[in-house]
Each structure stands twice: as structure tokens, then as C-alpha cells.
Image (cartoon, rainbow over all chains, first blue to last red; front, side, top):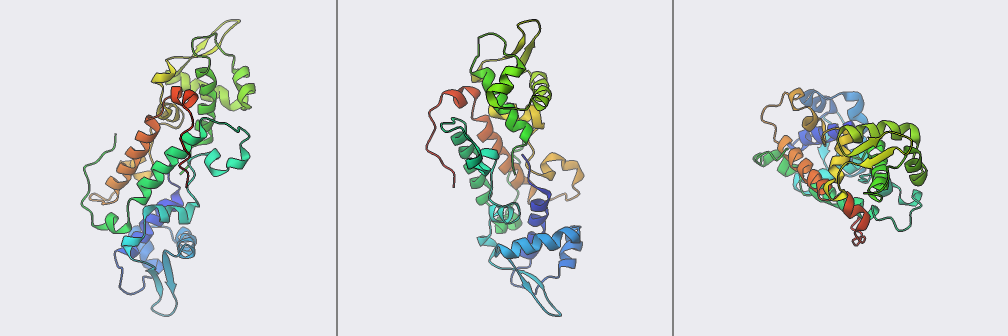
Length: 140
Length: 140
């Protein structure tokens, strides 16, 4: 149950833009160099982020990418979903119609777990990822 | 960010045993037929569940599998981790040593999200997956 590599790279890449919000467009090459990110992936990922209206491409000699909205208005969930599609923790949440168990007791439990994950990801904005002092680690 | 197919099958398979807790061992073939689950996967998955001490193989003519503990003592988290290994929502939680960013602001946030997912999965036992009336769906 892990974030896809594409979403992982999307988070790192968009944070580069967030850190320069309100400034000049940032060329993709620069974002890649800064974050040691592979350009062949980032091109595709940034076009997905643009389609989700999280970043905007600026054409021209001094072109590049800018954040389409304030870092306060972009959640981790929106970045993940821009790249992975709607969050679905398992098969029955991803494609309920493909399951033939009408009165399944487990499905609402997966729905509950999925909602908690959505809330966790939706509870953090890019702004917080940049500026918040690290909370005490809660890893096991 | 989705459950692996192996973990998905593990949950369905172990629920078959939970529903017959305290009864005769259940042959793997029966578990597969009941849940329409592929036997080639289930053999491997049940050996992982046995290694994690969640199920126990009983040899002999009327052998099969039994739950190693009460359904009240087995959480969804323990089933998922038996099959997928320790829960890690992303690369930096999976292998912190492979990241060279010493004062990363994002890592503690991933740790927090991971803990919330652990709590959600750890909050449900097999007992609840069988007997609890479905809560009102909270899917988006």
C-alpha cells in the first residue's frame, strides 16, 4: 500500500514550484536538477499536474512552469490524485461494479479506511510541507 | 496508493477461516472455491499468513488451515503486513537511509499519514469484518 513513484516525483517537483510561488516561471530542467529528478518522467508528470490545474506552463524564452494556485490551496491529495487518478485503496473501491457481493460486510470498512486516508492526505497543503516545523515523528 | 492483490486475496481468504473459527480445519481448495480465489496464489499467501502466526496448517487426512488466534485478535493491519511487509506509504518511509535530505520537512508528514493509515487498518479486527452491520458508506 504505497504511493506510486510518479506521485512521489510529482510531490517533489511541485514543491520546487511552491517554494518560488509568485516568482518567474521555472524551467523543467531546473526543477529536475534541483531535486535530482529524471526529466523523462517529469515531462509527463507535469502535463498531468497542468491538466489538473495545479501548475501552468508559460511559453516563451523565459518560460517554464508556475504554480496555478497558492500553495495554501493545493493539498497533497490533489497532487496524488492528479497523477494516480481518484484514490482507491483496493479493488472494490476502485471498481465497485466488478464485485458481485451485494451485501458485502467488508466494503464499507474499506470505504472507511479510504476516507481516513483521503482526510490525511487532504489535510496537508503544499504550504505546510514547506513551512511547518517537523512534527515529532509518529512512525512506528 | 492501493492494496496489493496478494493482500486483497489474503483478507478474503482469512475471512473464510474466521467464519469457521473453532471448527474443523478447512482445506485450501475449499477456501479457494468459496471465495472464487486462485489456488496458485493462495498457497503462497497462506504460507505467509502462517509465518506471521495468523493461521496454522493442520496435517493429515482431514487437514487444512485454522485460524491461529481468535478473530478478535487479528487486525486488518496484521493481515496486510503479513503479506506486504511493514506498511510504508512511500519511499522515504520504506527506506529512510536511502534519502540524503537530512532536515527534510516532508518526511515527518509522510510519517504522520502512514501512522493514520496504520491506525485505520489496525482499528478493524476480523471479528468486526464478519459481524458488524455495515456503517453508512463514507466513500467520496
